[in-house]
Length: 343
Image 1 (cartoon, rainbow, N blue to C red):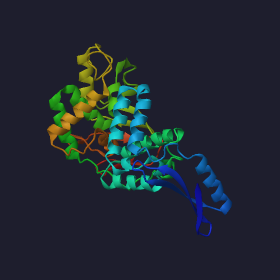
Image 2: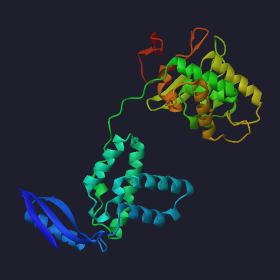
Image 3: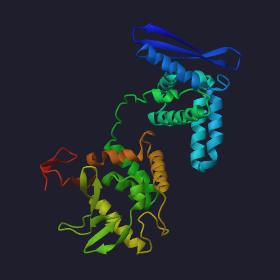
Image 4: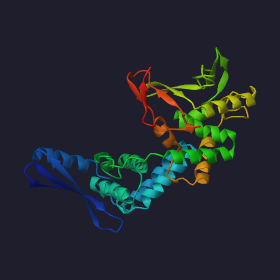
């Protein structure tokens, strides 16, 4: 049976009795309706019709367990592992003890606030919220609850301070550490620093052959000769259009020397076995180099990508590279503060 009361003009509270909870105590669901009394009556009728069969008997933890059992057979092993981990994290919070039928948007909102206060990352919060939403949607279909309260909560994001920028000293230290692991590891990290390539892009790098005096690396054209000695120019496409990155002479020499060593035995720069390398190999090189270099553990390989246009690599005191954005005319500012006219 539903009861309706007007809390203030145009705002109504609708309550329905949904049975007894696990302890045998009477349980109710309360909903706020904005509008006329007729709107409140219609909402009361909807809630009465949707009233769960066994309301109050199931907790959020019970629902999450049943959701896992119902869907796990259709997931890959990796997905199953991730979803089980997320369910375990949700069940570690007191929201798991709430009866599903009485869970409302305020409970979900407070749960998300608790996660942020505990320092949980926004990505993890989004993933757990998605799990909760999916489980509750199943609960609606099973009539364990009348509605899905997660859908009524704005996901929101907390304001985070921008990530700091790696110093030139940190970049040089991690490059030296990577070089100590081997030629391939050293070149991979150096290319990441000078071109901004991510680990998947690095793993995909391949050379097919020298074509018209240009060495092709993963679809990026690199110039193998120049008027003032050896020069390698990597062409890559970014969000702002094509970028041409001229590698430092030292890196150019490494690229060409490695190609000579491979002697056509493999098309993959970082796959000496002749098979495409797993991007995890690049990630492992980065983790080991970071550890050996002693730089902060918070630095990611992606930080090289985000700062590569601002890096100043040096080799004998010369400017290590120049980035040219052909789509934008005007003055190009170099990392050291120098400037020149864009071509």
